[in-house]
Image (cartoon, rainbow, N blue to C red; front, side, top):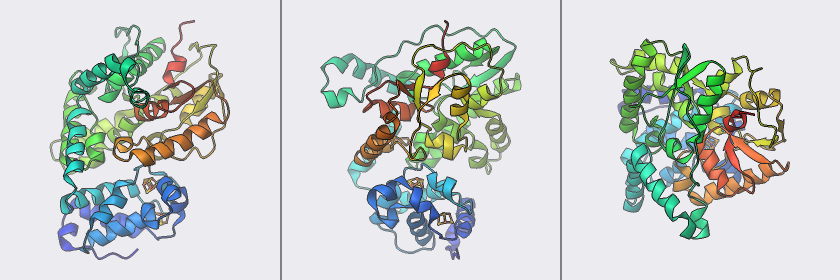
Length: 404
Ligand code: SF4
Ligand code: SF4
């Protein structure tokens, strides 16, 4: 695609990156067929190729309207289009750059600005989010049914093994996950302990920055990244083998810290090292000898929901499915498994109607094979699917966390 970006854009590193991405697109439209929002809305501007045109127009200095922002807001950042694209167009990065510029040029209605600010003020801060969640859980019995479904029940985590092994890895506690689904990291710690690996949490690490990034607050996201790097660095110097991600939505961003901080003279090298050390939990287990793991004899028929951040963002299709199959679980067939469930970071809060339609469609395909439960690899998908599922939804590591 030919471009003629305005010099104010081309004079920035992000502008030059966007230009290179735009030039790699041959506007063939293959990506449109696998885009969930195009499938729902049938409008070219709600598909990747249309959004690429909108971003190109904006970067070339054409007038930007609220309409442009609405189409960009409806994008899930699921990156199914990247998996489909034969030219390797890095749509996700282009969308981040385009949305950031649109955010500075277009005045959002005040209600949207306040809502987005509130989400940023609460969700990435584990203590604030945890307090609100505990209030919601205490009120759960008296909440209306629709609201009750959105408040996850309190989880018992069980005991966390103390670090006792020479092999050590870091694990990200995260923000929402540490309160909403704390069993995930507890189970991961117990399973890896049985494999001779101790998982450590750096107490001053926190939100990976993904929520701020999704809400176009780039500087805030970069600050979260720098804080995490500072928190992890002493552990890395002390020999931690890897930084384990139990939420694929966090993993996809932490693997990108190196690219996002490449122009920061103080953090570029450390960020690149952090990204190189980052592994999804499934990648870690796939590299270990698993014969000693005992898995539950119950709940063996599983539907696995592959989060977009795992299959498209991190390009790890099939890694969890292979692991579960090797360990004796029966996985049901899931049609259209490339499609997003509608969770997508803060998407289900910002675009509730589209998110609900995507969730219902996803649950139809997941439940078609009559599974005993649904397993997934990301806290956002887990919570979103659970709001409408007929069977329990959990993180797949819980299936391996079995003493009998
Ligand atoms: S992003 Fe890729 S698949 Fe989509 S129009 Fe461009 S080149 Fe074609
Ligand atoms: S990221 Fe997902 S929703 Fe956005 S354009 Fe690509 S396929 Fe469509």
